[in-house]
Length: 80
Image: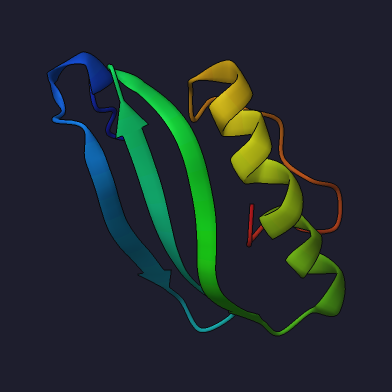
């Protein structure tokens, strides 16, 4: 997994997406003063209903930890 040093990013909102056959997500990540302040899910689609739980949980964990190295959500491995 590639990492980005947030200290070197300009403040702003960054839009990203990931599209796989089982999971599709588009999100907006806000960076301010070298820190993640918000990750907002703009749209998502999953083929397994329980997998959608990750979209509520994982962004909060990433912002709290300031890292992508967070625990996965049980029954939502692909969307995590």
